[in-house]
Image (cartoon, rainbow, N blue to C red; front, top):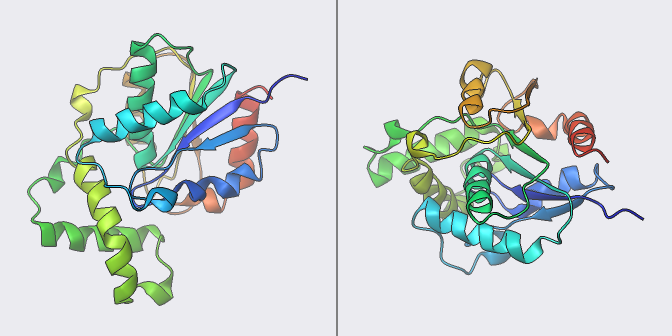
Length: 232
């Protein structure tokens, strides 16, 4: 029996690897490897990253530990898109077997330079507003102080490294096929198409209705696309 392809997944800012549980159920013929960031989820006791290089080095190390020398893909959601392209850079640099496909969702290749001048308090306020706007916080928890004491440090740490990440310095140009998922009201196509500066081979863009977490409403359709692209 042919081995199932692996799909290595990186999650959004403030999120945990469990985010991908919903799509794992829709992909029984694919072996999902849900990579967990330090300081998040089952790794919550570990110190969080100070920059994106530290995150990418860690994710690359965990990728190598879990990779089993068979066909595989990479998938990033929101901040996870940056994580994936940085892991991909390291895969290419180390001359490892390349993924057969890359899936990026809900993140345009745009430097968040506008956040660099924020004070810590301003960044916290922006992060809270953005997280609520994304629909990532249940309504009953929006004004819950214990909730924010627990989760705001995660969001703050992740956005602190996102705002310092410079796409202008991203040294990547690959012909690996890539698929991009987006919502026009969140990451419009006119911004998403700039991914073609880095993925110069076959690319497909799929539009979905909804907010930043449109995956929750369109999980079955996205899973079918992923399964087809990985030729299962």
